[in-house]
Image 1: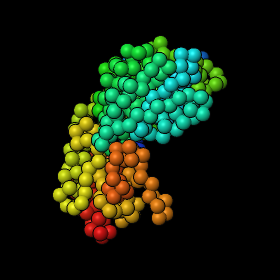
Image 2: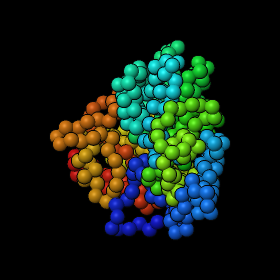
Image 3: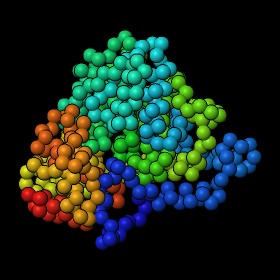
Image 4: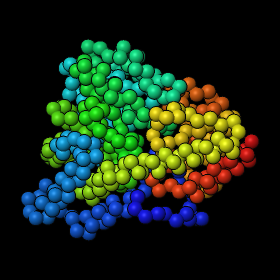
Length: 385
């Protein structure tokens, strides 16, 4: 992100970038220009519509440049959840004549797992593949699950809680050999690590704008040329007839610019996030007893740290960490604790999982913020114990 942020004593330190990111100043500038100057309907034939259409198509080229695909393979949506719904429901319904079996993993975001449940209610058979203690999908089990009636595999590129990066290229190879479509939810990985749809070998890939310093309410779905999806939103023929609804020009312009910035800065930004994440991890492990890191130490997103404090309650810990914004790895409801399905699937013992929090750094996270966060966490743990 351009410039640097001052550390305000009034605002808590933000370490929840996997939940959402602030809008990059370069992105905001583009959006403000469109808010002031570009109000036409992209479907209109006059000059105002032509100008809006030009903005949309420029953003499409920027998104395609980040993912290394053609512009015709980019469909703009309202966000990651819609992209996942469009991909899964569209692929399943369009290929029902070939089969009714869908394979997914035990650690998917609800925007995939809930969609699979809804498809099960329509008569589709869903196979859920387990993961190892680091969160990696069991490739042998996945391969065994593929059969003649399998029409779709959906496995996330990177996990939102522990950061595990899945071997999507290997999964895609297994599926493509059998003529099975592959979708990956890349909401957490795009903008943090290189995401090349050609190298991954996927047919469908989800992008969420607000995870890569673009606004909320806009996303994209990569659809490999030749892949047919059933119509998801009915109406007029927007987005080349693939998604009805007048395009969100301001949001799309912001997403396009965010993709351009991400492509330009991917190496440097990734290095900065990893340095701050590693500094945070080392400080917590140094200053806090009875603590462990969930997930792999290497094959994970550069900014993500899932850390467990044995015997503590994540909700109580977050409540005691005044001055720090983070997320829990367990959902707390009154006196009960509902451990996340990701941690359950990984087999993390309850004494650790119920005390898990997720810390995720951003491309502007400073050493000062990290060091203050370590002190806040250590103090909160000491107080609760």
